[in-house]
Image (cartoon, rainbow, N blue to C red; front, side, top):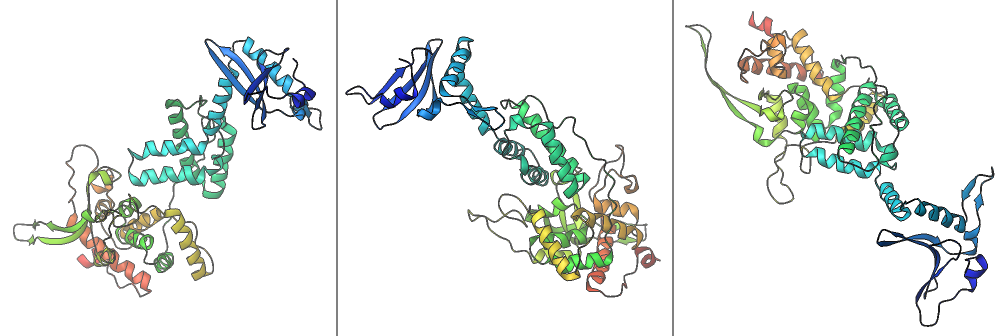
Length: 442
C-alpha cells in the first residue's frame, strides 16, 4: 500500500485494535499510525543494530504531502514522502536520524543561560564573594543578550557585538572584564565537555585599550555623595569607604567578628621618651579577606565607629546571628549596580545634573590623594592604611623583610582620625580648620 492523501482519509483501525501501524510499500520504514482516540501521525521505523528505532514525523494530514515553497521559490518544508525518503537514505548510509533528533533537541536546551548557571555554580565554590559577584554580574547582566542562544552556536561575531555594546555603554575597562569572563566561561564549557562547544569564540575578538583611571573626587562631589547616599547598607558602606580608604569588598563583606578592640603596645622613642600603650577600636581583616592575602588592621575613627554602631545585628532564617554586617542571604552586600543607579538619580535630583562617572574605588584613590597632598600624611603611613604591602613607598617591598600588620599602627590611628575630621568639614560645609600632621607636629 502506498500512503497517499486520499488513502489516509479512508484508512481505519481494524476491528478490536486501539493502536495500529500501516506501512508504505515504496519507502521502507515509512508508516501511518492510527490510535483509537482519533489521532493520526507519521512515523519512520528502522533497525539500529539489534534495536528498533522509531521517529515521529508529526500529524498525518492531507496537507502534509505538499512541499511548501517561499516567494523566492526556495523550499521551506518538504512533503512528508520526500522527508521519509531522505530519512531512508540516511539510514542506508548507517546514520541514526532518531538519535540525531534527540541530540539536536538536547543541544537546543543547552542555551547560554542554562550552561551559565552551571558555570556560576562551579565558580562560586572557590571564589571570594566579591570576585564571584563580579563575574556573576558579567554573566547575568552584561551577557544577557546571549541567554536564548544555543551555547554551541555562539559565534565570534556574537561575542564581538556584545563586547562592543558593553564598551559603548559601560566603557573599555568593563568590556575587557566581561570579555575575560566570557573567555573563562567558554574554556570551562570545553573542559566540561559541553556538547558542541569545540572552540572558544572569544579568541580573536578585539580587546580595548585601557587608560589608567585617575579620578579623584572633588570636595563638592564628596559632599553630595555623602548627603545623597542615605543610611541604608549601601549608603553606610560608601561612607565607611570614604572614612577608611579600604577596598569596596572588604567593607561590603565585613563580618561582626572582624570588629573589636585591639591593644596597641607601648612604644619607646628614646630611652627617656615612651608612648604609653592604648586600646583602639579597629577592623581586623584576616589574610583570606584581603586582595594581597595579608592580614590588615584598619583603625576606626569616631565617625567610622559611630557608623558601624548604627548597624543592627540581625539573624538569619534559621534564627542564628548573622555573620555579615551588611547585605542579605549567604553573603555580604552585593547590590552595587542597582544601588549606584538609585544614588545617581538622587544626585541628579539634588544638583539638577549628574556627576562625571565615578566608582566606589575612586573613593579609595581620593582618600589616598587627600592624605598625601592636603594632610601631609607620610607616604609610608598612607600605604600602610591602604594595605599596599608591595609598594616601595610603604617601606615593605621585596621579600627580605618580615611582614607586620601592626606596622605604623599609631601613625595610622592619627592619620585616619585627621582624615575623618577633614572629611567632616567637607560634608558639613564648614571651613577646613584641620591642621596637617606635619604642621601639627611642628
